[in-house]
Image (tube, rainbow, N blue to C red):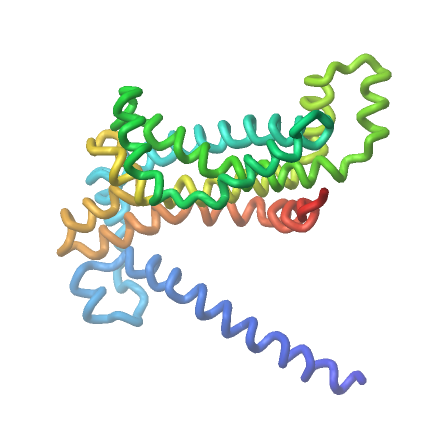
Length: 275
């Protein structure tokens, strides 16, 4: 058995190592090439930079990435706050209270997952114009919140269903109001699924492209995905700076996922559909 164990581990680990290389090498190449000059990117594709050009990052930031980056931060953080607050309140009501048509209301909320964003482009565009919020941050934040609520309510409600009823009853006996029970007991106990919701929402809001090019006309409010398209046209001959811009745009989500991955896995497993 002792002799077979290393071979078994090797068989298991080998495909995993190949997968890691396939996933990580493009990222490594992008990062290393972002420090190269234009000639070195094409002349020494597989080599490390002979001279590390940190100036590529400074140039990318001042050429426009800085503005797009801050716009994405504002839109993403606002979307996360809106989704977490609205979805957790909605999930609390649907999981802890029984009232007429509660199941119908829950199915109505879930119906949002069946709605494709592309189908809503024309009516959404007209609605945003009528509300005079077209070409503002709200033109992205409100649709993003709306399209992420269904999945967020489903996950958080499933997690809330797993919290013992006795804890809620004890809080009521101690004098906690309904809202205080939600704020002081349910939210702290649901940290993994809240973190999972934050990761899923941030991934969507940070990378969303379609709405950001249709609902925003001005460079002042453009986010990273749409901004990079203009950035590519403006710097089509300076690939080092362009790759530096891509690295800057990728870093926030990578860092977020690294620090929250344990909550993500736990939240997804504990928040499996119940009820």
